[in-house]
Length: 219
Length: 210
Image 1 (cartoon, each protein chain N blue to C red):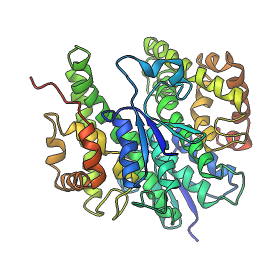
Image 2 (image 1 turned 90 degrees about the vertical axis):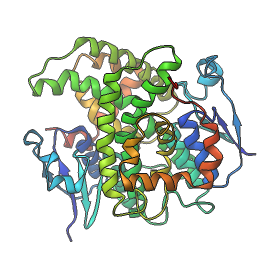
Image 3 (image 1 turned 180 degrees about the horizontal axis):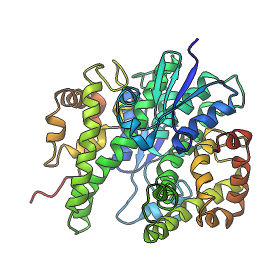
Image 4 (image 1 turned 180 degrees about the vertical axis):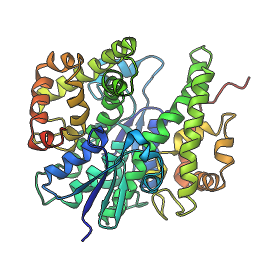
């Protein structure tokens, strides 16, 4: 039976999982969850993820949540097919992939998600973005991207010379970020820009990006 | 042989996370002190070890790493046959472990660290605790701990019936919070309370306290 992913293609965290499934050429079924109707807060959903968030993965009797735990599971289960996303064959290389995955999780994600929340999610709630939060987090994001600019001058991808989960985890938020008026943060850094363009050229990305339909307001 | 070195500070929760893992594995190591109050972590030569300017950084011979949870995972895999088992064999068990580590990092630590900062670390810097923030963050932590209470009603530890990295990653911040009024949130929940008492009384948890 194919794996089931509960969530919607426009959600950043769901897209992270979908990218991984495509990189691994794995069959799956996407089961939509109506977030606007708060179906993720119903007992039937909370029994799968008590934190009430998408995505959730079901694989036979295994139920998982947290997108980066799901990608790690998929990458490990299907380590012998598709793209090698974890460099599992060598403990030290695998550790470097984990290191840059932690960097995405703890340095990149908090800053970029705060910006996207203000510029895309807050207007959808009928409220005005907090410019101070945006500015503060753009500054933090810029510093992270400075580190990336230097790293990507030494290796083609963040954890070395091949694409791994460390790169993949960045894709959905960056895709939304590049739709905002602050895309210059990426475009002004040549190595980061080249890395981003490479990530966007991957077949898995081209399958998932049409689902990333949310956009900042045009005014 | 150059051996294992940890570049960090004995009071830092992230440094302690790594030290606990090393003690669980009975590994010899050297703790190289990074003087945070002098900003040593924001300057060279430390920045060459971690360009994000945070402790800890790590060396095993000529292999270098940073990010405490990447380091603990490296230690757990590389030294799987030494000391205590910190992982769970099998891809589904490892997935449950990975999920538990993500929950600690994204749901627990983001809130618990703020409570530690407000009530303990701010005092080191001569700043005042903001009780409004403490109240707000305690509400959030309460909800996370409600989930933990349910989970720990089903298994002795967070990801398994034995102690793993998931439990380990929680220890340093919990140790600090037990010294604040926030400790009531742990004490009010019987399964959480028993788990906290268990993980903080392990020899490795005691060794890292200064």
